[in-house]
Amino acid sequence: MIQPVQALRSHGQRKSFSVMLKVWRQAGPTADGYLETFRVGDVNPDMSFLEMLDRLNERLILEGKDPVAFDHDCREGICGTCGVMINGLAHGPLKNTATCQLRMRSFKDGDTLVLEPFRAAAFPVVKDLVVDRSSLDRIQQAGGYISANVGGAQDANAILVPKKQADVAMHSAACIGCGACVAACKNASAALFTGAKVNHLASLPQGQAERKERAVNMVARMDLEGFGACTNTNECQAACPANISIQDISKLNREYFWASLTSQD
Image 1 (cartoon, helix red, strand yellow):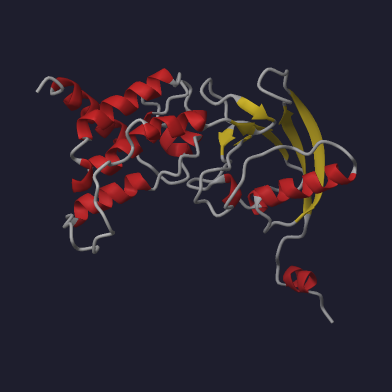
Image 2 (spheres, helix red, strand yellow):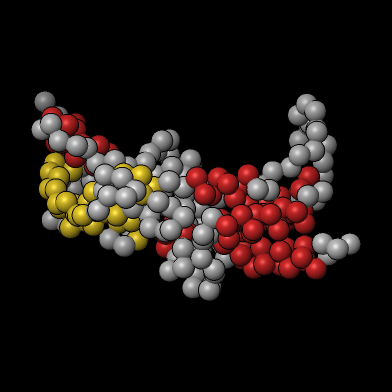
């Protein structure tokens, strides 16, 4: 009887292979970091990148060694928890793909992969590939909400929103807050993240009451957290797994400028 794996191989599927990993190891925020080399064999092409790291950690644990720390949660490209630099690219080589959705078939036998954490002053390293991205949460808390007391949930058609506006809002709302835009930017700017959060609510009628305060407060918090300035190199858009557009940065600038000009009204 042909085993399932053998059957797959007989239909032209790639066989298992091995990769060499150079992984950033750092015990804590103030500890010195270094790259440690591991060979991971028997890698199935259909494995996700995180499953490959799971395999490495299973081996390290059996050997009594410290496993590699990395962020993960839903593993469905939704939550934004995962994220590492793979050969210098946030989330790896595939466009619009989070690390957890990256499959090992994107690499080939014998490849050397350098894994580093997202690097930014506002993202201090916790351990190995894990960074503290709570600075993004604090930007959101500064104004990424509405405080209207709406009572129970309304019928979906109770508040009429033109489709064009709804589409714009939904596009901005797709941001998963992973921080890849910050990691990819040479200035470690959070303008794309902040722009998406501001414009999501600015595009909807429910977000109008606090529109001015939202833009001013969220930009102020972004600056306070130590993120750099945007210089329009577009690396953020290229790295974003949710395909957030740099148009959100342009809209953020307009929202902030308008709010600043009219704040005395």
